Image 1: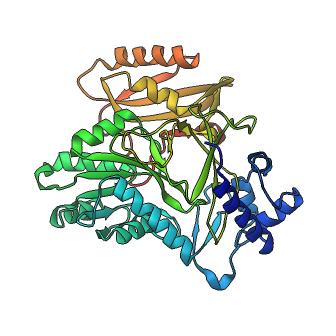
Image 2 (image 1 turned 90 degrees about the vertical axis):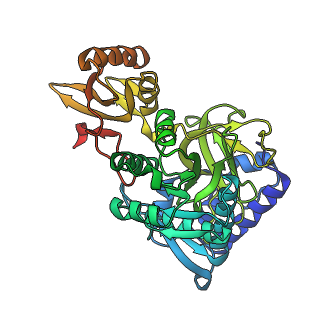
Length: 411
């Protein structure tokens, strides 16, 4: 997807605003001698921005609009250092709500739906993003926030919620609780809007079958508004993203060069109209690809594939680069196991060890199944892991994102 003339003009407008405000990123652009872009070639010379840049600008070095126009701030979790603070103007908040409303509409959700929102509220962008979009749509919002599964199920039944907004981990936990309690006949859910973490086909199938609902992947990140910048449609051929608000590139994560449409790489996003904290060529570290051609739904918005993982997901074990998605793909070929797994990496007696814990779906020979899985994993990654088969429900369930990889080597 090559940047259009209109998008170049919008980028120029944001560059001027960044430089005029003397913001952190404006200074970076001036230092790079990039104060204007006229061509695609110029755009590709613009420096990338990284999460480290955003952290270095803490607390309000990213603020580009005058302070009297800033109505809200949001923040990333800050689990690996200083948090990133993103300021929003009233227009930014409204633009985000418009994008999110589009997401709901793309999923076939209307103002007659009752939308139960389980992601967190506060500095995190999730809960309030789902809510703003639903209110813009005119739907009834049930703003539950995270946790308290007892109350979630009570409200879900009594208020006849038709849409569930959650992480895939929490959707699975709710599905299992509904099955356990035998209350499926009291549940009126029709659709699930799922975001915040990558999830396997097996997990999607399990949630779909347990709850009997249509599932939609929503995309977004705190630095770029929040969730709601893209979603899949009823044809499920990738996620449409809103290219009147963001310009999205796919680059080779090693070289930084653009890759052809259809090829896997790292998502890089430029905000075209954001006022509070515009970002130019922001490296998300999310891995996907642009899907060429038109979608069968007829929508003109371009598409990216589901998020395949992150460039920083990579684990180096015994000198081999391993991605969790490789393990997930192998496990997906075994009908005897469900979608839940955990990878633990430890360093014992001078060598790295990888253990994979998997839940079985039936009365299987645990040892024989573990051996078959270990052999299949070895054929993909080149060394043999230790596989432990456990009963359903043994692995931890999460109300937020599930920690699938635990690296004990550095604890």
